[in-house]
Amino acid sequence: MPGLARRIGLFDATMVVMGGIVGSGIFVTPALVASHVHSEAAMLGVWLVGGAAALLGAFIYSELSAARPSVGGQYAYLREAYHPAAAFLYGWALLLVIQTGGMAANAITFARHVVPLPIGESGTAALAVAALTIVNCLGVSAGAKVQSALMVLKILAIAALVVCGLFAGSAPAVARQSADSFGAALVPVLFSYGGWQTACFVAGEMKEPRRDLPRALVIGVAAVIVLYVSVAYAFVRVLGPEGLAQSSAPAVDVMTRAVGSRGAAFIAAGIAISTLGFLSQSILTAPRVYFAMAADGVFFRGVAGVSSRTQAPVAAIALQGVVTIALVLAGTYEAILNYVTAIDFIFFALTAGCVFVFRKRGGAERTIPGHPVTTLLFIAICAAVVVSSFRAHPLQALIGWGITLLGLPVFFLWRRRS
Image (cartoon, rainbow, N blue to C red; front, side, top):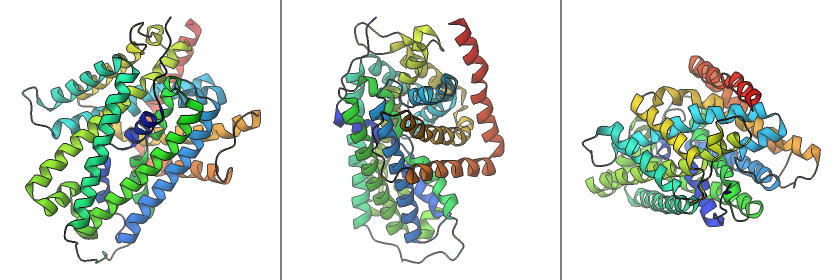
């Protein structure tokens, strides 16, 4: 049976890291942050703290990826550190909730920012998912090149937004007189910084994963911190704390003030490219988890198939595409997104705990600055996000975990059959 092709270098890997983070959220999340904290310093502080937390995570995952550069990334770490069941639950949640729900939402956002087609929003979103699924079935090289091109376009669009924000007229620097809620503001920021870990899924298709993946994680996350803090500064400079908190489309408002209606059209195109880039990255990376599950004998065996012509896991890619399109057409993706946070951050914490397990076994490279304090701090941040999610949306969080734990009987059934 043909194996996966090792075609991804450092540049493409860095673009994969950045592409997994930057979607449509940065264009709207600063307004949500402004509703919780009310001064320019506090708003920028939230983005810096969130970026620092993401960078801690990048250092943790860089050590794990250097020690175990396996197909499936986070799935492989959980399998080898704890138990195959823990890894399966992650892959199960990824396919049914975490990845496909986010992809469906981004596909709809893309459809809302392009020229309307006769097939409607859902049809346009499904078409985008199908087209990128086909591109990635042509091989990891084709998928990586498309992803890198879209990420470069995203960077250019964000840079243009920031430059326009710096040269547009500034709002009066008047802070709103009400109590700040730094913790509440931090949760959506941490969610906006998520996604860098998905680059680890394609470790088995990198030319030099032990060398390049840790570098790509740190460089990619650091670059996104610069982009995000710059965008937040541009928004609050042009709109002011009060105006930013009241804006439903801050990116459009900033560009409109800077260059008029042409700016609004430009940023709409930028948002469309950004969401398309996120879709491309998700289709490139996440199917490698389902491929690894099938190779372990705990999922449909056909999903472990690799095309003899393109050396891509075509069945795994197609499976994710079908599930995402089904969510788009059914219109259930928005409900699913409410389940994501509580699930995703528990798996972040569990994965960070893998560092302690692997170091105890010996042989792991020790590259995390300030370990164990920094690793424990990252775990504590993840735990705080999960607690906040349960407090804010207890029903959605419980449903999310219910869906995840339904994977346990499925795991043992598949394992028994294999």
